Figure 1: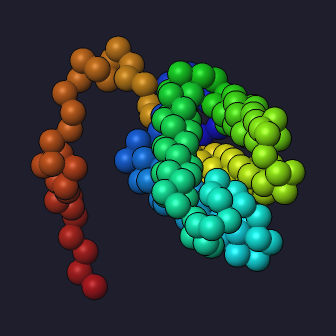
Figure 2 (figure 1 turned 180 degrees about the horizontal axis):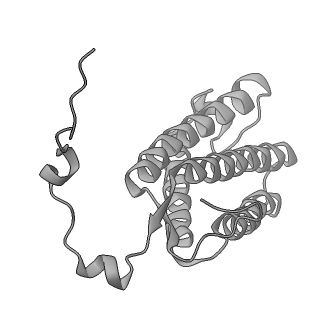
Length: 181
């Protein structure tokens, strides 16, 4: 449908299968939430770093663990919405999405480094945020690429003609000659 350089014929426009995109977005949200929980469990359980909870709260921590996981899931859904918007409104959605996600992830990495907490907690939070941001960006970008579609534009001539009926699709003319074999 497109040439070597990705140029589309004038009667074709790119589109997106919203159902597939959002199904993938929900799956990405689950992955992001679980990734946040795993990151906190590793930081607290293996490295004994107090991330988002005082040491007395244990490996699971407190309600902030659930909040962190829910925020990670919400970010994945927001990223899916952003990709959907960019896919229908911009000429190079993956490029814009990539830059936006890099900058948002950079903010999420730098922000904990500015807090007045133990350096180990700063670094652990920054690393968890980096991993979550990179995974969300990569998965949403990949899933959007598989949800892209091409739609033919209606020409003036085909818009005036009625769509073919089922009979026209399945009708076969009888053979004009019969051969004995």
